[in-house]
Image (tube, rainbow, N blue to C red; front, side, top):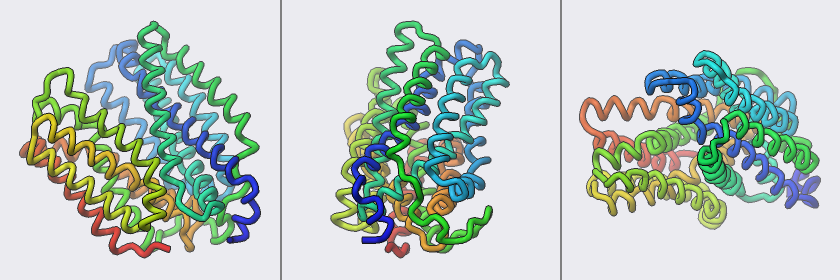
Length: 386
C-alpha cells in the first residue's frame, strides 16, 4: 500500500461517499439547466437558429477554460477548486434562470461552461485520489452518480414545468440544495491530491505518448456520445421511421444502459483489466451501431442502442482513471490534457454527423460512428497501462 493510501485508508468509505456526492451535485446542476432549456427558449422568444447560437456558448466556455483548469487544480488543490467551482456553478445556474435577453444568456452560458469544466477536472482529480486509497478502479461508479443526477434533474424539471414553476425559482431551490450539501460534505473530501507536487506545475505541458493515446480514445468516445445525444431521436424518426410515441425510445434505452454500465464497469475492469474493458467497450459500441444501420427497424435499432449505451458507459471514466495515474504530470494536468483532446470530439462530432448525413444519409453517418468504436478498440491495444 502506498504512503498516500495509508494516510487516508481509515476513512476511505467517507471519502468515496463525499466524492460521489460531488459528482451527483455537478450532474444535478447541469441537467437542471438542460431540463429548462425549452422554458427559457419560450420565455426569451428564441427560434431554433437563435437557440443553436446560444447553446454553442457553453462548449466555448468549456474549451476556453481547458488549458488553465489543470494548472489551477494543481496549484490550489482539487478540494478547494471543486467546492468553490461547484458553488459558483450553482450561482451561475441561478443567473441563467434570471437572464432577460439573448445576449445576457450567451454571456452567462460562457461562464457556466468555465465553471462546469473547472468543477469537472477538480472532482475527477478527487476521484483519482479515492482510487489511490482503494488501490482499484472506482471511477466509473462516480460517473454513474452523475448519470443518476441527470435522471433526477429531468424528473424534477418535468415536475416544475408541470406546476408552472419559473426557471429562476426552480434554480434557486437547486442552488440551496447544492450549497447546503457542499457545506455538509466539505470536511469529508480529500485534503490533498494523490501526486501533488510530483512534477513541475507549468501552465502548458506537452502530454506524453500514453496520454495522447488516452486522449484519442476519449475523442472517439465523445464523438459517439455526442452523436447519440444529438442525433438518436432524428435517427429513429427519419431512418427507423418509428411512430411518434417511440421516437425517443432509442435515446432513453441508450441513457439507461449507459448509467447501468457505469455501475458495473469498475468490477469488470478489476476482473478483466483496463485494456480488455476498453476493447470490449469499443466493440460493443461498433456492434450496436452496425446493427442499427443494417437493420433500421424499431426492435433491432433499440437492441443496437442498448449495446451502444453499455459500450460508451465506461470509456471516459476509465480513461480518466488511467490518466490520473500519470507519472509525468499531476492528476489535474493529466485530466485536463486528456479532456482537451476528448472534448474536441464532443464539440465537432455532432456537426460532422450532420455534414455526412447531408452528403449521403444518416445511415452512413452512423456507420462512421461505428468506425469510431473500432478505433477505440484498436488504440486501446497500443496503450501501456500500469
